[in-house]
Length: 394
Image (tube, rainbow, N blue to C red; front, side, top):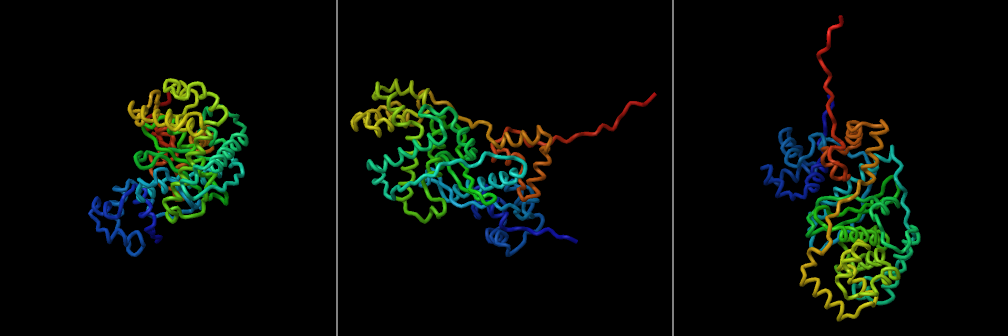
């Protein structure tokens, strides 16, 4: 008789995926914290009813806890925006979700030819002090890299119409999760898949306006291009982290609002808030980001900048600007990949779910759809009912 083995690491992963501490899960299940810890470390095995209870509370399929991962994807560093306010628990939950995205991506590679990574080779010196990032040489270095990326991708110097498509076309995978927006705006992660580096960008979904989401994507692109991906970010100092955040912001600003083209646009009315509302429709960037960029380019004085930002605060625009439109991601490459497999009769939705389960990704379809940012019911399996009545033959 073949017995199933319970894997404690799967329980730990499921708990952290749901953003729960040992204490919180113990309280919900009335299983002691000590017992759950023993289960997670494979020092004890829960009985059938306890596994059922844990699976139900964590909203994971029962079989999930008895499977070993068969994927090779390996996650290294994750850059989070708003790291200072996000708890380690918050960050871990989102990082684990992105790991599952990487696993499902790796499985789909057997059937789908995804865009290859197409990033320019960037030589970035940078600085580890947030104040040093403000000097002219540091700013110019980032300006040059932003221009280099635009030239490499051959997108000119005008507004970027569809940033998500541009990133995906060049091998960066974009998805979105429901996160606590007050703590995590966006994050990026590098994963080793089949021996190759794959970069993922995840943005917070909800009521965030288009301008901020686009800036978040560009900010994460800045991390991908400028910063190390082989170290523990918990080990660097707060000043070093702030410097990297500052550099990513500067890159996003220079990349979305190029010095010459945006500078020429704003030069006519650099202190007119009505004019910024007009340009917002063209550049698809927030008014605050454009004001900051105008000041950075030296087109307005310090006093003019401070006055405009006071007006922004007075008008309540720090929270909601004129012309803000809630942003939703386009149907991404995962939706295209799943649709292609189903429409070309390569795999059915059930066969896709079975393939994931065979490789250790045992999640409910709703969770998979959320992780891959799929349309609702993309992976819904319709049970075919075979008719049991027939007409008599005459």
